Image 1 (cartoon, each protein chain N blue to C red):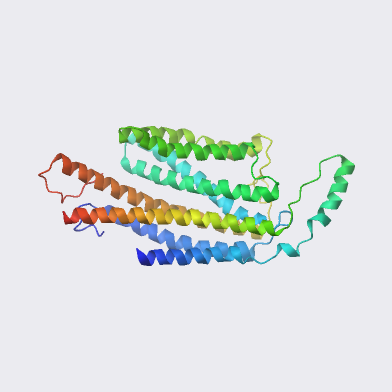
Image 2: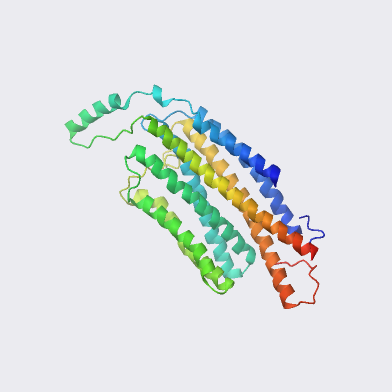
Length: 252
Length: 99
């Protein structure tokens, strides 16, 4: 797919591909380092024991999920305003990754909770709102495919993408606003981090690794979506003009 | 795509290994009963609820292992889904180039 002889113009997407691969390698390196830190560098927490190590997957996944849905909201807003297909492709890619990372949050949380609280699930504000967030963005995909017109589906999904993001600050602030069983923030405290320095360092490396992984996967998914869009546009053009040569690049 | 898949499999195996062979650091920590008993006595005297201390059992290790495994299976599954989608798109581009 070198973009020179291909009927689909892939030239402008070569940079995206390079960035995705580059970030992927960086993410893999940082992930190996974070795994070493999680199991060999960070001390075992005094009260919770080994189960606290779930925190190093749970918190970065939650951060990445919030980042992903934030990007969905911004790009959806941009799509509604500018009608730029690239923004819709980024929103779709980001929503997909957001759902994957929220699923990790929703699975690793109860695994920690069963040991730390003695219960798999507690209907407390943060957990409930996170589950709601997951349902909202699963609905985003259902809505995209639920209409006859793809354009209308994209528009409806974009509206849901913007509205659904309101849940993110609610999740973040719920531990302060309501009586919550969920642990409070240990890093972004006004008084400074309350955890041991090794725990904070390990968490920061994990956050970096997950963020790099997210951007690498986001670019890869965006690339696939854009190529698919161009192929579809080319097919539509070929259907509309059967006699026309199909060797022109279509810029969507 | 085959070398990429092999590299991803190797990376996944590398990342999943530490979860299985984590050093038993928690076993050296004081037993929860020793730590919890004075806290419970103190709580009974002050009238507050005793603080719940998670048990230090093998089950906690299993939970850590499952949490890490699930996270990596989901992420790896997504990468496989993405590579399949990418291959399909590549095939379509090649088909269009041929036609």
